[in-house]
Length: 305
Image (cartoon, rainbow, N blue to C red; front, side, top):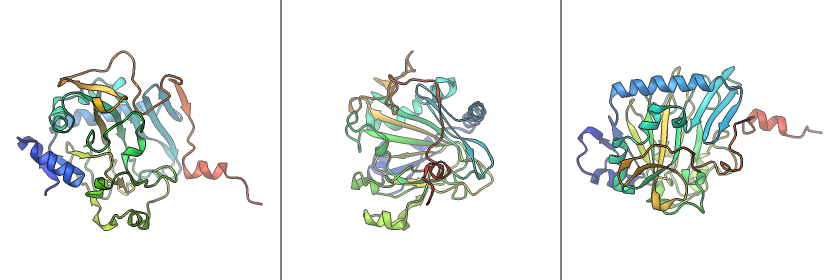
C-alpha cells in the first residue's frame, strides 16, 4: 500500500481512505500550486516579523505567538503561531479552501469543525526545533471529543522543503492502531528526547519510523493516534509547516466551523473554544514568560546544598 498520492490525479477517495486507515498517514503530492505557495510563504514571513515585535509569548484569545529568546541562536525567534487566521485574510481563506474539503469529506463528511490552526517554524541555529514522539490525542479535551480515531484528521502543509536535515516530520506507520500510548507525558514535547526503549515498551519499532520528506505544496495527513515527532533543524534553512486539524462536527463540542453542509464557512465575530480552554475566563491579551525550556527549569530548581 502506497502512502503517497498525487493530488491532481486523485479521482477517487479510495486511495485516501486506504492509506490513512491502513498506515495512519499519507502524503498528497502537489496539493497546492507553486504560485499560491509563494503567496503563503510571503504571508508566513510577514506573520513571523509581526511575532518578533513581542518580547515573549503573547496571547489574545485564540491568537497565540510562541516567542523565545533562543539561547543557542542568540536571538529572538518565533516557534509557532496559533489561529493566525484572525490576523491574516489569506490564512483565513486557506483553512477552508475547497481543496481541503475534497480531502476531508471522505473521512469527516460535509459538516467539519477546525480545532488546530498553527504555523510552525524551525529557525536555523535555534536550540528548540525538535519534537518528541507523541500523539495529538494528548492535546484534545477528552470530555468534549468523541471518536478520536475516525472522527479527526490532521493536515500538515509543506511551505518549505521538508528534509531529514531540517527536521521533517517523522511518523511510525500503523501506530494509530494501538490507541493512546501515553508517550512523552513526563514533560513538554520540545525538551528532552524519546529514547528508543520508550517506543519499544509500547510495542513500536524505532527503525520503522518514516521521514516525510516533502516539497512546497505537498500535504501530509495523519490521525490523532498516529505516533509522530521530528528531529532538530540542522540545516541553514528554515522549515515552515502549516498544521490544520479538523473534526467531524458531531464528534466535538469544540472548534471553529470550516465547512457546513459542504459550504466554506468563515470565522464568526467571536472566537470559539478550540484548544485554549480558558478562552472565556482569561481571553487576554497578555504575555507568558517561558517556563518549559531547560534554562527556565534550571532557574526554578532549588540550589544544591
